[in-house]
Image 1 (cartoon, rainbow, N blue to C red):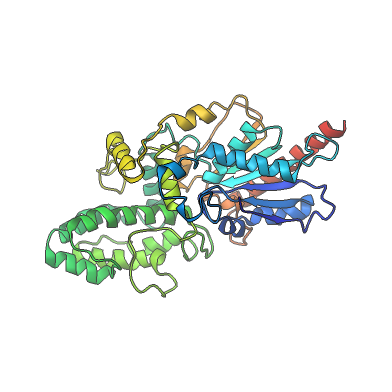
Image 2 (cartoon, rainbow, N blue to C red; image 1 turned 120 degrees about the vertical axis):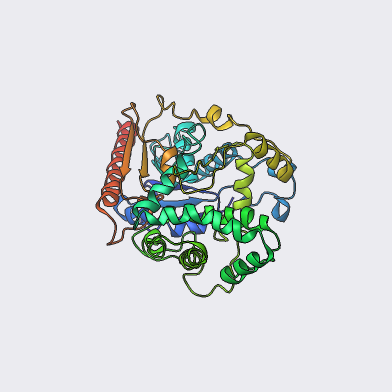
Length: 426
């Protein structure tokens, strides 16, 4: 396993360990985009550890053959990743129960946030507390349409409601153009696709999936400053996108406006020569690995209803098709209750020392922990927040609710460390 360590603020080796539970991607990317940990480390005199998740980044158990077969990929599970993190902690902090022990605070955002919470729940003797930001641990059994509905709301309020209306209307316009050879040529010329677009399904399948991912990503990284986490984008990219779709457009004018708006995400730097619709994610994100996990334990049904309820084409959740697609791609079928059985979902009665934070402008918040009757669990809601914005570095443009969330995090971390040391030394 690859991991990054920084002891700059903990020269005597006795301070707390701030431990990032790596996501579905290169750990360096998450270390660079989790500035909150770096900012509080000097105050806490803490070491920083960023652990890479197995099968992502450079942590490939079978090298270049790691993704070759289900036989190799079968070891890609969240439970085994948590066990890796536990083994690493045991090596870094071997005497955590003795007078030489050091408190460990887990951090994570999105899937990493789920792992941070589960790490505390599964290994409470190793992990003192956890900050779980934008962690959708409810997504396994929540309404499949919630993500699409929240996403539509984000695009409706970002500039004008016409934005989400135009997006909703664009699917039929694109479909109609894709139904003829001349129409396909118009779309190819307008969007400048990289690949060879030869049939309607290239638009209604691959391009539609790409657009859906882009809209989700824009909402997730809708930060109040320029960023490059999933793609280089300007401040408030949803607002910038919707500024191009602020009036009612039809036909080719709508297509032109959509192409212009799409460049906010696909070509903000102006360096992209053509539009690659095969993948809407940065190369640092391990989409193949996450697809496999989605086909095994991370079974999160998604659907859209259209008809004014959201801005997407009607797409019911089809469990059989999803399972068949997984079998075709990986030779496996989903274990639909695996994560709920392993971690308990919202049954958090026995959990403690976890902060669940959610930005309410984040479409994943629909699967987040937004309330709890367990007083040992802290809930932080960030009305203006995008995806795990509270774990990012402080910025002068941060809304007050984001700054407040970070303060709550720090207060809880300091309390957990104090309680740990009191138990240790009496």
